[in-house]
Image (cartoon, rainbow, N blue to C red; front, side, top):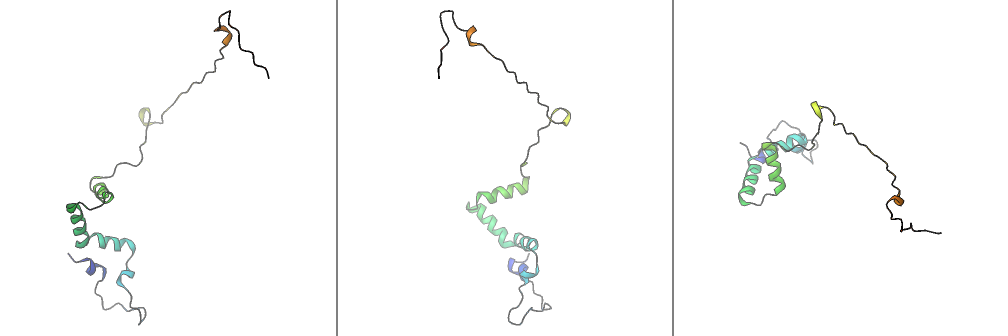
Length: 116
């Protein structure tokens, strides 16, 4: 397994430089995905992860991400379905009932009178 430096700086003398004052960097010739894969597959990164786990100083978010990739992440969305996989049918019934407060009062009680 080659080191991270070797993966990011392959030796290729056939590559011409873009200008004599500024030689082109081999990192400029790979896309972001390839660069990230090279970093992740390097022994230095694997040692960093292993040391972080052993020493206990690896951030919890990184450990959670590792477990998600290893065992599968929990679903981000939960779909609830009704009978036979169809949509849930909800029936709501709203009733309006008018209650006359005069029926609840005793004969001796009177309704309050409000004047404006």
